[in-house]
Image (tube, rainbow, N blue to C red; front, side, top):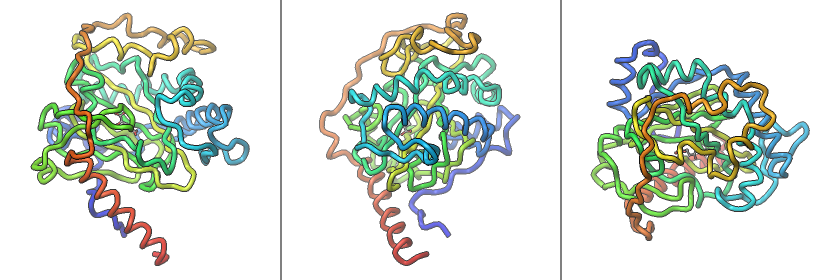
Length: 329
Ligand SMILES: O=C(O)CCC(=O)C(=O)O
């Protein structure tokens, strides 16, 4: 029995794979498409091992027999901190991490969702989320403000490991993309900005989430409000990747053509790769590079409505989980 009633369960869209009209209609209505076990689990398991090996090499997680558990052994690190780059740079060099975005199953689905010329941005993002550091849990936000270019930009979020509720998977505010671009406020979590959600939106839209498993793929448009739930595990890191897709002929900004955080050059990323097929692949594609616009950001995010609502739901489910653990249920 689930005690997480404040979040509704995500609906699987596996049944409409192969029907582009149905996929697009559902995305336009619900703000997300969830495909359980779309990608081969062994492929993700291989990537998990490589990513965790990189994290063990910099002393973030325990190695040896425990490696695949992803047990964090240092104090939490925030994206953008100096220490963060020691790990990020290693992960960014992993060929299989970038190759996953080009996996024919994934690109095939994104072609159904967006159109034949759908391609993943060169910018590939990994999230390395420490337990017990709630201040940096990814807040409710839209992807558009940090990417810009075309609003048709569509994200895929892929857990690299099972992500049960307590490790903090993604939640999507169903129907939220229909509300258009929302105001921004500052935040410590990934992306450093959150969306300011109007109260009537929170009354009308519901958060949806699920117990993600390795092999699952979540798809959502650039205006969909989404957030990560807290990683409340005792020691397990949550590892996931984000690849954003768009159609050829549409606009993007320069940052989407660069490695994440720009701390490495592409030549550095490519050192030691075994296959050249996807090096600089975007140079052959057609798109328009447009300037990145500085958007207004509220400095004080303490008084806005939305985070409050998301966090209240988090606290309620946390209390229920603690109750369940105490009562042995
Ligand atoms: O995995 C996360 O915590 C954040 C993913 C996300 O929402 C994003 O990259 O836009």
